[in-house]
Length: 39
Image 1 (cartoon, one colour):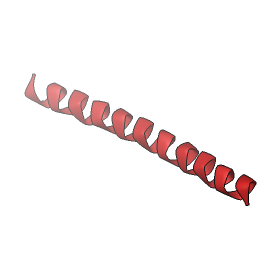
Image 2 (cartoon, rainbow, N blue to C red):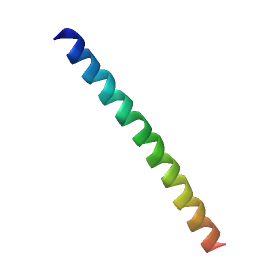
Image 3 (cartoon, one colour):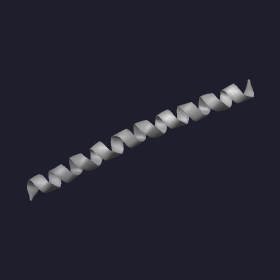
Image 4 (cartoon, helix red, strand yellow):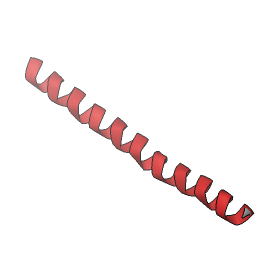
């Protein structure tokens, strides 16, 4: 029971981390694209 709960918390953290990293990367790519279009 304890292991299952801890495992779920770890899994949740593991799933949410790459998503944040992915969103930051996408945001930067969009920002660079906008800068390229303006200039």
